Image (cartoon, rainbow, N blue to C red):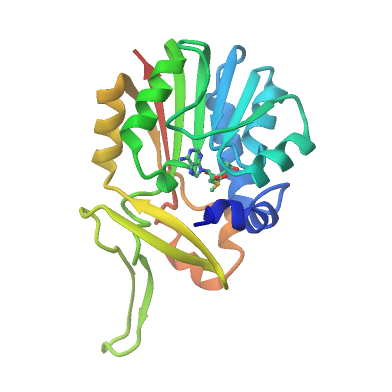
Length: 239
Ligand SMILES: C[S@@+](CC[C@H](N)C(=O)[O-])C[C@H]1O[C@@H](n2cnc3c(N)ncnc32)[C@H](O)[C@@H]1O
């Protein structure tokens, strides 16, 4: 079966990179920039077309980007900017033990089937004291089945944010655009935190920013959900 990320890399590249997505330009990239160390070697796990890797390289880090999708790694290499890229998976990074000072996984772990071996592999390649930034679609408020409900049947009508089943882990193929199906794994937040701490990381900081202004401006109804975060940012220290 073809990897959906291989098949649909062009969708991701068109919609979310090169300044196309305000959530990246206004929120995700600035948060990463703020929390990365100033120097050292960094692994961008699930690097896609390299937007996080290029940012880190610009900041002065020596960056290795890794992604299983050839179509992503090939575009990343052509967009250049300093990082080196390899095709590979989170569970087999192919780097030496304790060779990186920082790692970022940005909107990647929700596409990984086995998070424990992926975290163990990250822990292996990082030096003690290193920084690991984990960015996720908010695992509580963006579960499958979540969304804005405008219920006109109720009297008076009610508008509210519905949260889909939270505690059950789920593996769903979601149609993110017509004809574009991507696999998502939903897990409760505790699953991520406990897996990371058991792998040898300590949680240092958590951010749940309000949706980016440029995202809210895209549709009038988004304003009603302005207090529902879309992103979760976790900063870990490798012990
Ligand atoms: C939503 S994109 C994010 C890309 C990039 N991190 C960014 O923020 O621009 C998710 C990426 O995760 C990659 N991915 C999926 N499964 C993976 C795995 N097992 N190990 C590493 N990366 C994976 C996909 O190929 C895809 O490029």
